[in-house]
Image 1: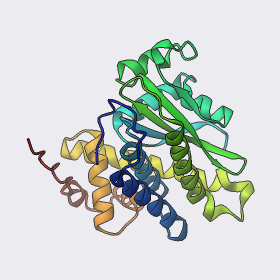
Image 2: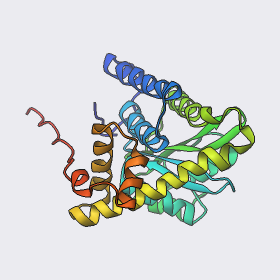
Image 3: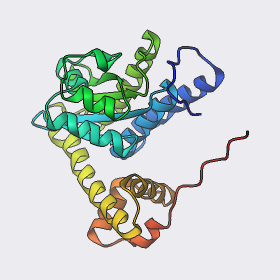
Length: 262
């Protein structure tokens, strides 16, 4: 199910209910089974885009020192926009983490809070944004950020649904460290940050060898990991270490999109 972002989704349909159910089942499954945190967060960005009609989505997580890092994005374009936000220490996603509450910018063209970020987001094609905190009890881990292609706001029920998805994902992230609350950021989240470094290195290797962009490189890495029943980070580390065949990964292209009927 796809959505072009031309207007907010506020109605409930059987197709949308199925997407919501699928997203929650996948997130809850991650709580009871071993999971790869980067793959989980990437799945969350794609599910929120499908369900809520956002154009793109991204996730920021804080490291042990409280510095935000880009952990997942539905596209390379959004990943770069999130990085711009962090490098300039300005933007709704950063403010969402700091305040620990949703930050909604219906129309960035009318915003004065983020003089550097707002024009950058508008130029990228996202004049509207909704940032929701990733939280576990009183601990704010980061933020889930929805980028809209048109200056429209999410309805209150949609904001609540997005927050519910973010909350379940947060539980999945920290559940393994439930007995080590004092070390959640230094252990669980630092592991996620280290995993991201390996994945970025593997993406670069694939992109250079296959002569594709970083988005396509990441897609092939994920497809290979899933088709071989291995974790995304595990495959990335093996590629970086030279113990995995990069040509086998490159060969895993995403299937062509189904043709639309006229």
